Structure formats: C-alpha cells, structure tokens
Image (cartoon, rainbow, N blue to C red; front, side, top):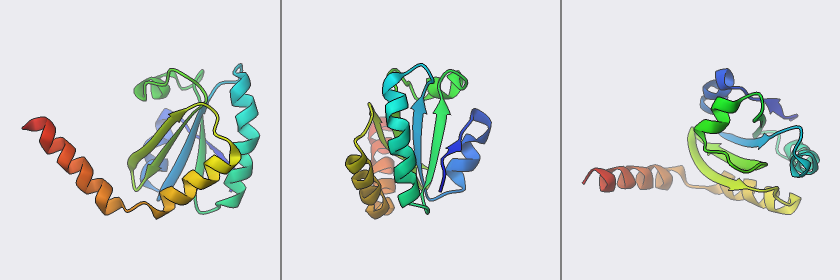
Length: 124
C-alpha cells in the first residue's frame, strides 16, 4: 500500500479506522527525512495490511506540536487506536520491518491493562 498524507483533519479517521498505523513526521528541508522516505515507502509495500502515513510538520504544525515533535524524522505507531511506539530519527529498513512484526504481535489486552493501571496509579 502506498503511503497516505495525514492531516489534522484526517488524523482521527485514519487512526480509528485502521488496526495498525505507522506515521512518519517529516519536512521537505530535512535531509534525514528525504533519506528515510524511500525506506518508509519500500517497507509500506511489504505490509499492505498496515497504513503508512506521512505528516509534513511544516504544513501540520498543530498536529506535530500535539505530539511534541522536536526532531524529524520521527516515527509513531498506533495499534487499535492506542499510541504504542514513538522514536525520533530515521529507522534502518530492517529495524522498521522488525518493528512492524513486533507491533503486529503486540497483545493489546495487555497494553490496555497497562494503560488502565497507569491511570489508576496517577489518580491515587
């Protein structure tokens, strides 16, 4: 599947409507972003069941700001609507493929239990 452009207005629809979404926060002027783009695109072709989205931080400043993006490229992953991964820097192709495999195997019942436990710890 080719990558899709994500905007603030389409963000919730993309996240809520798909099981696994990998997002690349990037900018045109960023050399490492331009180097990462073909890697991101190639890996997207290997996993057609995963949505690969790109967010141009120069156009979508509010969306990038909501994630506290300070370094680009930054890769963020959502599974079943929950943010489960965030890392600044370009990922090597093998690392990105490995990450997707691990995210596909991730037990979301455990993740939801951990989220609930963290919420109750913060309110106690």
